[in-house]
Image (tube, rainbow, N blue to C red; front, side):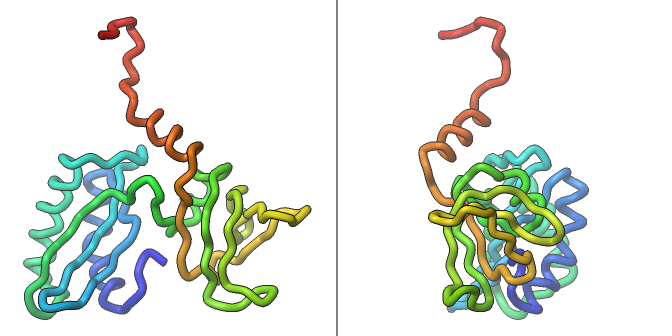
Length: 176
């Protein structure tokens, strides 16, 4: 899910150590074709935040490595961004971190006649995503390797949680 193609994986191998040295995690890599290819890299700091300055810092560091190693044939644009509020979930830790929030999962195979599931994340256990699905009494366990795509669903609760992380942590009473 973090990568889809061999080219994505080659780029991932180059950029992950660079991001780690900056205390950042690569969330997803996609190379989009077109007249000029676009290398999209989503990343976040270890605390889950990512602002414009961090994107610029990572972009500069990745540009140097990508220019030197040249894993992309032809010209390309490098696009570094945060995962956003309705972020993709691409690693087991993401399912743990976002437990209690609504998510959409798309599988690479049919399960009970369907590939798409939406429900409340309940964590990650034994290489499986735990998700509470509507009209089901028990928590479903979906093997992580079956997931082709996963992302959070925009809800009021998610917006509130996102806003809470953006609030200044200094509660010294200095309010405007």
